[in-house]
Length: 30
Image 1 (tube, helix red, strand yellow):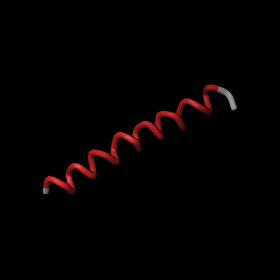
Image 2: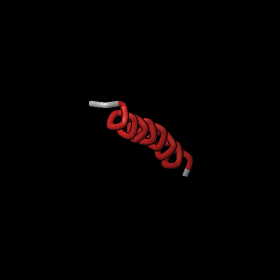
Image 3: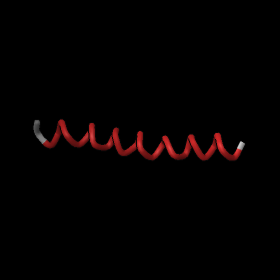
C-alpha cells in the first residue's frame, strides 16, 4: 500500500479511537 492509501485509514482509526472514550464518558456522566 502507498502512503496515500495508508494515511486515510490511519486517520480513520485515530478518529474512531478518540470517539469511543468520549462516548463512554458521556454514558457514564449522564
